Image (cartoon, rainbow, N blue to C red; front, side, top):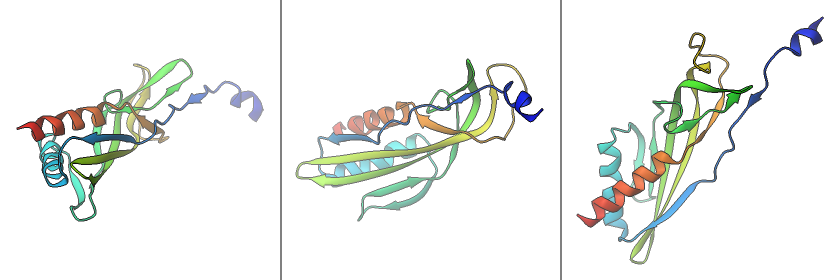
Length: 148
């Protein structure tokens, strides 16, 4: 009888996690670091840790609509909708007149539902992958601030 009930469930398909986002900024480390901090402040990203000497900035979890920064996959044919908890860690490293930047992401569902039907729920929690939008927007903002 248990096997019969298990056969009716829909398969959860998780998104493929992209590799960490890596880019170089055409600016010395001090200039790029200041621009990174300002760009995060403009986006109102809550920070958990910031260490200029080691080049690490870590955000606290914050809520973002699924589909904006987070891809949380699908159940059967329906996308998971709702909100995700997202967090980012930014690593900056001097490289002569340039600065290498890497952005790592960690995301999971918060309030979600299958498709546009049903009530939002907290569980089960699904792992999500970055859409790449946060990283691209952040680095575009950093490049713009470096030019000012």
